[in-house]
Image (cartoon, rainbow, N blue to C red; front, side):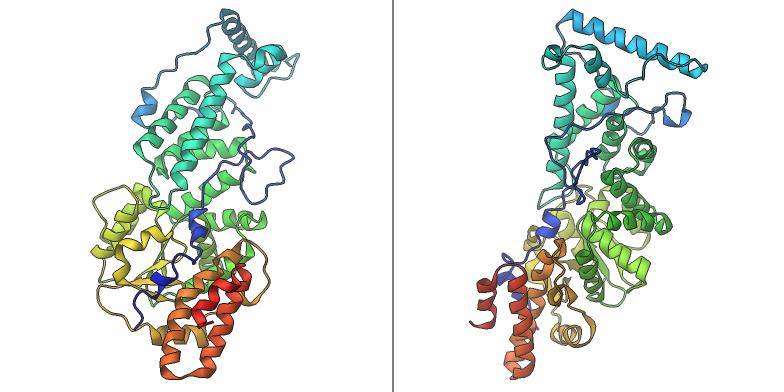
Length: 448
């Protein structure tokens, strides 16, 4: 029975997989080489518009109150710029009216209000335009606060400050640049998986159908609404785009195999959930294991679905370390296994109740004899391909998540005098050191 052997190696285990699981906004420039979904923050998002004649692309009702009541006040002081902006908008409206009755416009209609201004303003006016400056400010404000909310190690929910600033940006786009990609996508993102806002996501997808961040949100929505037939093709596109790597899929297979019968596997965010969901649903691996994403627990629809499965939920809707601790305590009669892709901050409050089993920590209020389970996983069940194969992709950094199980297992093998198996486990530990570029650091786990 090895309780908390992981306490001594938690600082080394790279749960940074989930910590780095930030939901950055992909600008999808035409010449982009970013196939991993990471965005160069210096890029400006292209602003597109939907056809206003399409009734399905209008305003939607499920908006936060802070967005509904937002009133945009222009920072522009130069009356000439404001007059020019109004003239451009009038020309655009006139051009659209001509197109709607079959009259060809004399000039291509710009895709956005900002593009209109940039066509009309001289180069020296662009940099000083208060309107363009305000648009850039609001875009950066949303990106910064949204990324901040998604990259925290101890919570998934946005802080009040983060939410307020995101709502202000959404209000700006809805007031000044309605029916643009940003207005739709930002509105959906600020809702944190609010399924009532799905039409906004659909509108954003219509404007930028190849945007990988949009595809991530679509896949998440279909998982939340239990539509695997729609979620799987989206995740497959992310796999083809190498947003979800083969190394992640390999790891996901062992993570699923680590689950006890009919257990609930708790994960953190996009990457671990997408990989595990795809392997389970597409490859029919351990379909008895239930998958729970802490990130998706922000969704009222998702929480209601879990409540219908007799999972007792905390009263709070703030998803953080305290939420997970209470969730485990309220459901101690169930087999809850916490994926090691969770940041270590989540484990600390309940460390005395966690036992390493495979690539998970099993929560239990009573002692668990995990030696026999881990020995069987070591000898019969887990594939360890991520350790043994040269994948050379983003999955490599998760190799160290095998350490808690292996170090715990090794300790028991030493006590039993099982030298042959101990040496085999030592080899695996040393391989992990090589793949994670920490060969010297892991030697202390095998007494060297």
